[in-house]
Amino acid sequence: MAAVCDICGKVLRSASAEAMAAHKRESQSCTRVKTKGATGEVARLEEKLRAVIEAGRRLAAHGGAYDVVEANTRERGEAEKARVKELAQQSMSAAGWTSALLQGEENRFAKADEGAVESQLAAATAAERAADAARAAEEAEGEEGEREAVDPYGLLELEDRRWAATPEELRKAYRRLVLEKHPDKKAAQENGGARGGKEGGKEGGKEGGKEGGRRGKGGGGEGGNNGNGREGGGEEGGEEGGEGEEEGEEEEEFKLLSAAWELLGSEEKRRQYDSIDYFNDALPTAFRPRADDPGRFFRVFGPVFARQAKFSVARPVPLVGDDETPLEEVQRFYAFWTRFRSWRDFSLLAEYDTAEAEDREERRWMQRQNKNEVERLKRSEMRRLMSAVELAQENDPRLHRAKEERAAERELQRRRKEEALAAEKRAKAEAAEQARAAEAAAAAAAAAERASKDSDKAAAKREKEKARSALKKARKELKSLGEEGAAWRARASDLEAVASGLPLVEIEALHATLSAGDEAAGTDALEAALRKVLG
Image (cartoon, rainbow, N blue to C red; front, side, top):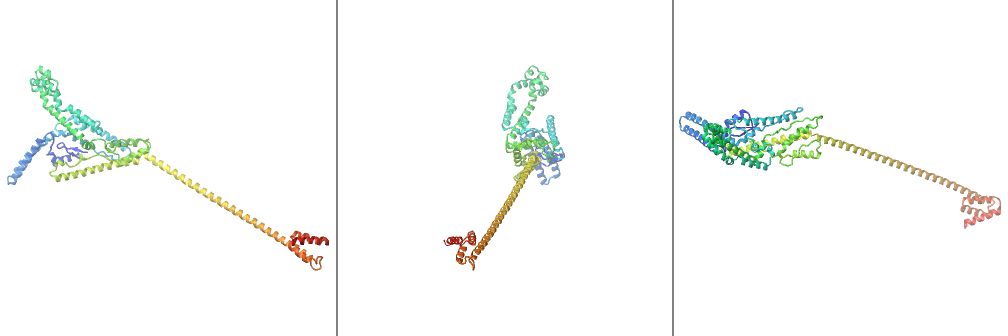
C-alpha cells in the first residue's frame, strides 16, 4: 500500500514506519520543500542553512577548532532544518490532494478455495467502505500539524462522478466554485456586513471580537447599538477578530480548488491521477464453478470487467453480459479484452523525484529509472489483467456450452458421414453383386445359346449325314437296277445320270416305279427323270 510523506508530499511505495523513517532521514526533498504557500521563506531559510554549513567547513579548513565549529554548525543547521520542516508542513496543504494516493491499495486473491472469489470481493467492498469511513473520520478530526487528505474530485463536488465526469462537467463545476469561493468575490459580497462588524468590534473589545469570530458573521447592525463587547459587540465585531483567520482559510480553500483544477483540467495529469485513484481493483486469480449455481460466474466476473472498463482506450467497451448473451457477442467480448489497450499511467508511483536531482545527468538517470519502473508496473498490471481474462475464458459457461454443442455437432457430422460412407459402400457392393449376377446370367445365357446352337448344329449334321446316307443308299439301289443281269441293264447309263441329279425323294419314287415290274411305266418315269436332270 502506498503512503505520502507528511513533509515533502512524495509518494512512497511502502507504508511501513521503517520506510517512512528512512525516507525522512535520507531524502533531500524533506529539507528542500518548495510549494506555492511559502516558497520565498523556505528558500531563504535553505540558503541560510547552506551558508552556515559552508562557513563551518571553511573555518575547519583553515585549521580552526574543527570539533567546536562542527558542533556549532550542526546545532544551528538542525534548528534551521526544523524551521524549514515546520514551514513546509504549513505550506504543503496547498498541494494536499496528493495525499489521496494514500488510498491506493493492492488487492489480491490469496487462495482458490471454494467461495474464495466471492468472499474476497465482498471483503474488498467492505474494506473500501471502511476506508471511506476512516478517511471521513480523519478529515473530520483534522489533527493540528498534520496534512489532511484532500480529494480533488471532492473539491470540485464531483466525488460521486469521479473518473466518469466529463471535461465539461469539470469545467462547469470549477467555474461555479470559483465564483463562490474566490476571496475577492466573497469580500465584495460581505463588504456591507463587514463594515458594521468592524465598528462593533472596536466597541466590543478583543474578547468579544474573538468570541464573535467563532460565532459567525451576522452581528453588524446589533453590534453598533450594543457596546458591552460580549453579545452585541462581540458577535457584530466577529469579522475583525476572525478576519485574518477566515481570509487565510478562504485563500487556502481557493488554492486547493485551483490545485484540483490544475490536476483534473489536464487530460494527462487527470489520467495519471485516475490511474491510481482508489477503487476496488481486485482481480480473481482462481475460480471454481458450481453446477448448482450457474449464475456465480457472472456475479464474480461481471463487476471485475465493469470496473476495469474505464481504462480502455477503445470505446464502447463490451461487458460480460449474461447467460442469454449470443455467442457472437461473447466471442467479440473476449477478442476485445485479449487485445485490451489501457491508458492507465503509473507515473505518480515513480520512485525518484527529478526535482531532487543535483545536475542534469542525475535528472536524466532518475527519468530513465522512473520510466523503467512505470513500464514495469504497466506490464505487471497488464499481465494481471490478462490472467483474469484467461481465467474468465476458461470458466465461461457459455463457452463451455458452445464447446459441448460444437463437439456434439462434430460427433453428429461424424456419424452421418460414417453412415453415408457405409450406405455408399453397401450400394457399391449391391451394384457389384448385381453386376456379377448379370454377368453370370449373361454367361449362362450365352452358354445355353452356344449349347443350343451346338445341339442344333449337331442335329443338323446328323440329319444331313442321315440324308446323305439315305441319298447314297437310294442312288446305290437305283444304280443297282442297271447292273449286270438286271431288268434295266440297257438303261444303266441313264440310271447313273438320273441317280446323280435327282433328290432323294424322287430317286426313291423312281426306284419304286422301276422295281414294280411295269416296263412301260418305268420307261416313262425314267424318261421324265432323265429330261428333268438333263433339262
